[in-house]
Length: 122
Image (tube, rainbow, N blue to C red; front, side):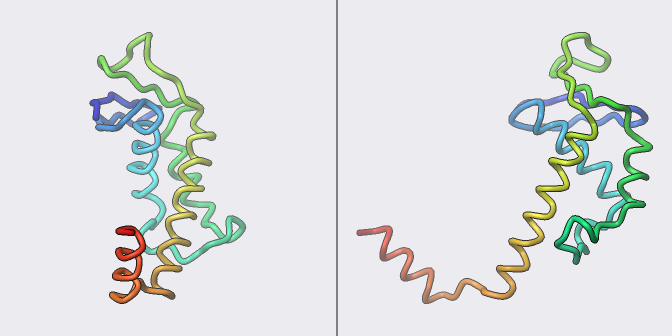
């Protein structure tokens, strides 16, 4: 993974990621986890999401997220629309929340894992 310098508005982070968009997405997560309680999310529907947290996060960010492997304020930095990056981050959080809920309802049993292992070995 590469090191990326990510900046937008009042936010500046150095992150490691596979690519520039992943770095922008991770920086978005770092900003949003301060204002939206991601680990305690119990909403699964986009209509039920807390609007105040998103607004608080967006106030810290500019219209674009700049990502560079070279350093801060570089002309060659990749540029990602903040609203589009927020939408992508939001979809990932919803998907992970649904997956976690499903795993809690239908935990993977030891017997199922053995059956899957048997299928893979054939």
